[in-house]
Length: 310
Image 1 (cartoon, rainbow, N blue to C red):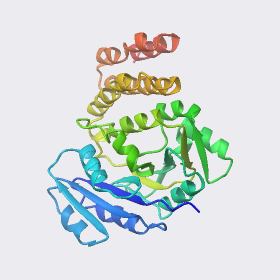
Image 2: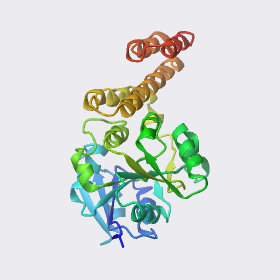
Image 3: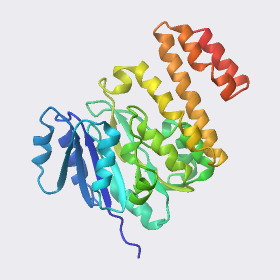
């Protein structure tokens, strides 16, 4: 009988005194107990440290000078001893079965490259906004194939679509610790989209991905997030985070490179939409003009014309 996986749960936090206790409690309440819980405090100036330290021995607390979420997660991974790494942001939370479902999936399919799954978008009061898998073409395809089953294996042919618009997020990702270190972890110096950057590189070396088709966690939508508080900066940084991957993945399978290009196209369009809403139409056109050479064709021409028309 295969050995049950040991999950190291890494929680990065910055000034999270209001939500970090809920995040930690959701991990400690797992039906399949985590191997360890590591909280990395990225230089908080509030009472985060006091809140975390109240949990005592079940939680390992690490402090670092403010260096960003990528550095915090990497520090947690460096301190981890489990064979699988999972992550959680301080304002989100796991559902009780989250680790159990992935443990079951891995027991059935021990050679999976990584695992992901469904989650709920919720408001700050916990009310449901929508499910992730139902909101993306790849997620819908996986649900249709699963046909009511709790999980499914996503093969490489679907990874391009998954990259273009993924349904799994940081709090549903599980990957071998050895793979994380082989990839170099989360990219440093990237303030937004560091998670997508890692996910795309992970997909490029994967052929079998375990997908849990039930919501595993809650992603809390709030106005103070980087994307909502400064959407222009967030979208500009998203494009900046994706473009270097072209060189990184130039020898990757065609389906992966196509997925990356579609992801870049979407990021350019999202940036243009933000600029249009700000009344900066010519800046918006400039943001999407590269599509004409990056992805030549009628679709790109239509995209540029749509921005020209506002």
